Image (cartoon, rainbow, N blue to C red; front, side, top):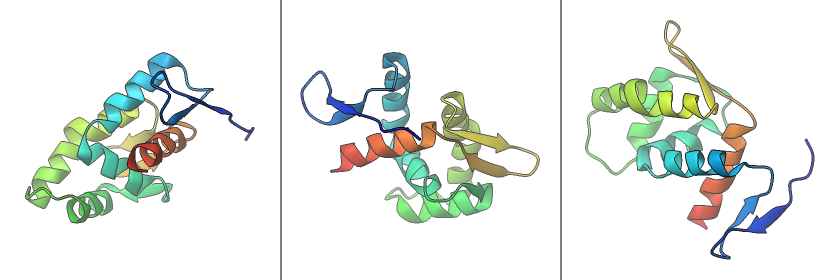
Length: 118
């Protein structure tokens, strides 16, 4: 992979990789606007692949909400995983219930997530 230069964003705060298109960046910020999706991105980044059950357990244990695991699982299936698939950050095999992180989107999301947390 090539070196990505970063430039300050419009407000002059956190740097944004130059190779992310503005429309893509908007989509990424929309993805990261939700706590459950931020946890999902963080959980997927180090692992290239997880089962839906593993991902559900990971998200359930990390978040401060009181939703039962089945509610977390359903929200992942119907809302959060499809949104991440729409920005090409992951693939979801419904039959095998396998979630696979995809580059470069998952790395870009992780980078943006790291900037928002620091």
